Image 1 (cartoon, rainbow, N blue to C red):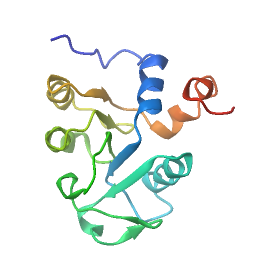
Image 2: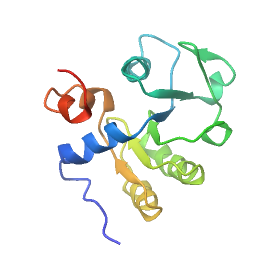
Image 3: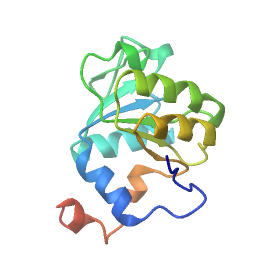
Image 4: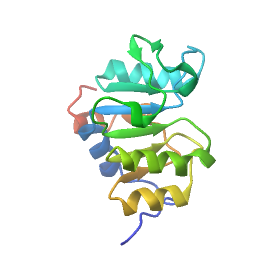
Length: 152
């Protein structure tokens, strides 16, 4: 098994392929606070057309922007393509295990969220892994929009 070198820049093709193919994104560490970065990312990805599923045990059963909040990945009632993580790097390994258990295809660690053991675990399970990146930022790099079938 060859592992991705997460010290190198991810290719634009790799990231664009993920953003083009995933439809359902579970956001672990979603916040209901509009001043938080995770809220803004949730909003933009939702408005872009992704089926967003907020995950936060403290907010389970409530709603963020009209979307039901789940307490854990295991509680989600539909298939998840990507698990996006707004938690500490230390939490990523446990979240990777949960993401594997629900058959997610992608594990995406937000900016500053990097754990090489978690990446190896997810890659061993056949998942694609991105760490220390923001999908909202990547989504709006102008040279990608045509590759994603979106207007610039």
